[in-house]
Image 1 (cartoon, rainbow, N blue to C red):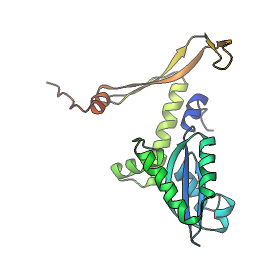
Image 2: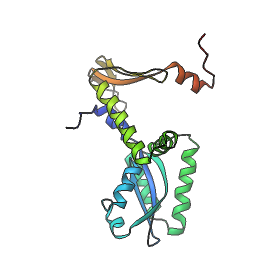
Image 3: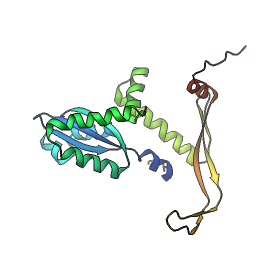
Image 4: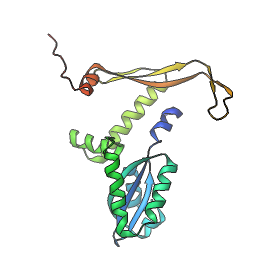
Length: 202
């Protein structure tokens, strides 16, 4: 039985949609969107992806880039699909270059980095990452604190009931009490981000 997952954490993990471009064996291009490009690629090559890629076998992933919400990704997908083939690749690559300027590492890039660092296949690296995330989510949802010395701590945090205002109407709203996940960075992590060398213990 699969462990129950905190809906707030699941929503956050699925919030970022990506646009991707595939080249098929017949030379045609397929544009799609997904929250997990690596998983979607496996679905395409196994014949479980889109109807188009079941009849036009995918050859390679040309490019992928994070877009944002699902609606943003759908608009970007439609815009790319309307372009002639000769302009599709350059259009997607320009989006890739734009996203890289934001210095954002997506899940696929993280999996690739883990695979390279730990000398694993990408499939094994993805399994390890997914297992680690699921384990942390399960523990924190249960009320536990997960501490990784030097990296940081994940823990549940209670938010008391409070009032707010509807931004559109200004009406007062009652916001129910809830529990949310929080992450606190550890000393080694903070030091690394600050660009300083960790002090040696005497």
